[in-house]
Amino acid sequence: MNLILIGAPGAGKGTQGALLAKRYGVARISTGDLLREAVRAGTPLGRKARSYMDAGELVPDELILDLVREALTDGAAGDESVRRGFILDGFPRTPAQASGLDRLLHEIGRPLDAVVVFEVPDEVLVRRLSGRASCKQCGAVYNVHSEPPRTPGVCDVCGGELVQRGDDDPETVRRRLQVYREQTQPLIARYQASRTPVLIVDGDRPVEEVHSETVRKLET
Image (cartoon, rainbow, N blue to C red; front, top):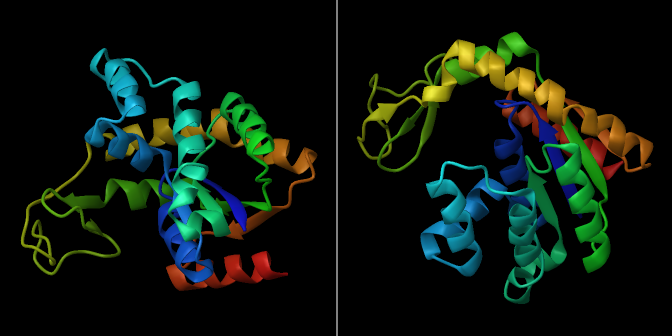
């Protein structure tokens, strides 16, 4: 099973990607995670990425695609889950990235089976993201509206301090959503035109219900 997950920031791609990867025994691939790990480990690709980041520049699409290629080929040598399939979480985000990914998947012989799109109203996304906080120590994520910690500002897991990302204030969230509408949402029509199955899932429900609908649509 080879999937792409598409959705606005806060739509639940990461949560659903992790659940689907566990259910089907495939690899969940987040380009953000790949990039952070490569930089941390000081790999050749990580050093290249670090040079752009240190200069305050965006990491080029070509370098991100090289990281994905490495994960799907070199990584598959020792990871049975990668050989069984992959779930791309939040990538591609632009038409240029989608075209590059098309070429890569064709080259390595790993075609897409489906694209899953999680739809959530903007006002719900703003509430979700503006209430999000994470632990500085262990990274556990909370939401002051829907999943608050037992003690305000304190992580239930390790007792660390909870902080909010600077780009999670309501006005910045709205700008991020606008970027999604302009750059990423057009990919839905692109994949539909290419005859790749595109599954639309209502993401404005409890996690378990969203997961159940996603599985039902994938299996039918």
